[in-house]
Image 1 (cartoon, one colour):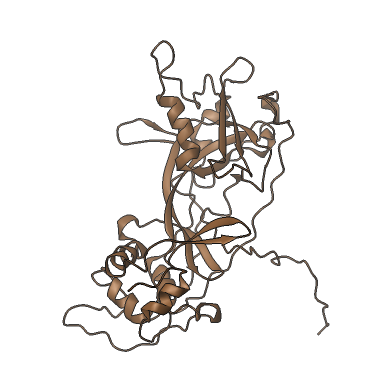
Image 2 (cartoon, rainbow, N blue to C red):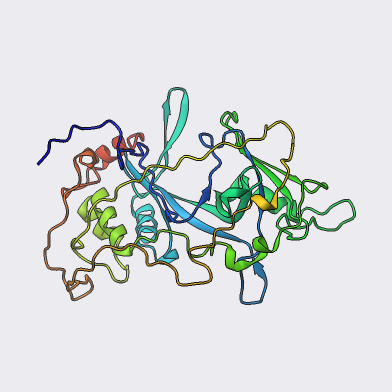
Length: 370
């Protein structure tokens, strides 16, 4: 067997030090605009409807919720909330806030002159919006999914749609296929603590375009309902169990339907994939110098979830087990609980001992209560 010397960089060596988990499938091409990627902004066109709702209205955007800051120490991630109000972490958070209101408060920490919020290990919920877009500077990349915050970002598009013009008529939709607006988007790095998102909408001749048929056809657009990585309730409960004292976990999960007692066979801590790198736009940012649109350069990549059989998502092997349910008259049989990783053990809310309220308050950076 040969001896292989180690390399500084190799396939899979790029680790996301922020620990932020991905919630959109790797197979879905994304248009990224942030303070680190496409820092000079991009010129985009919002594409029309990918489906109809129950009334026949065309649906062209999808609003969803994610939970961020989920974890302790450096082990934090984000995940797509697929189960709504029946999400186990939603249930736990609601009861934790009721039973431990002091521990549930959001703290603050100042690092390098900047103020950061400190959340309890169950994290926080935020709303986001995804749309189908093309990058005017790189139409050869085809149709991509654009993911932005709902508040202060996509809300600017909604405000534009709802604001009546001088004649009292509402503005046309930015994704009108016959007069598709050019939208410049940028996320400012130094916003002075204000809203970093900038959206500029241009419907002038030469900027707004008539979309070719390939960009109107819903079969070519990504199904925005089916682009997310869905975590099971059991996986979320197992992670939550490692973040809190066992008694606290059991207390705050009381009343949750289908609560499994004990560990799920085959559960392993998630790994975090490296973030993809995207090229910055070619056009300068000053003004709305719209690059020329060349339909011949457009590459339409058929959505892996539209107009056909969606690829089967990768799932962990199913291990047969007999679940033990905790309920009235059914005491749970003692079973093994996974030991929290070393980096979590400093958290006084984790482990199996009794909860030390003062130690927990100190851990969260909050003043001691009387």
